[in-house]
Length: 51
Image 1 (cartoon, rainbow, N blue to C red):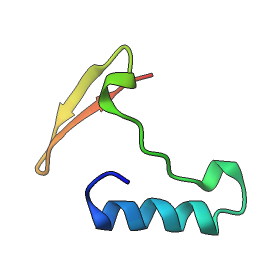
Image 2 (cartoon, helix red, strand yellow; image 1 turned 120 degrees about the vertical axis):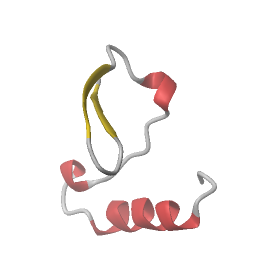
Image 3 (cartoon, rainbow, N blue to C red; image 1 turned 45 degrees about the horizontal axis):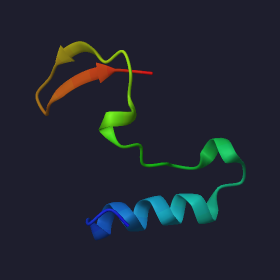
């Protein structure tokens, strides 16, 4: 799906095991986000929020 087998497996398992649509993980391409806003930087990366 996305070139990383670990991520692919995680997404597929979440979709298969979800009891409702709200429990599913979904990959969203970066260019689909709007109003990206920087929040903070931590020890493992930066945090952003977007719509």
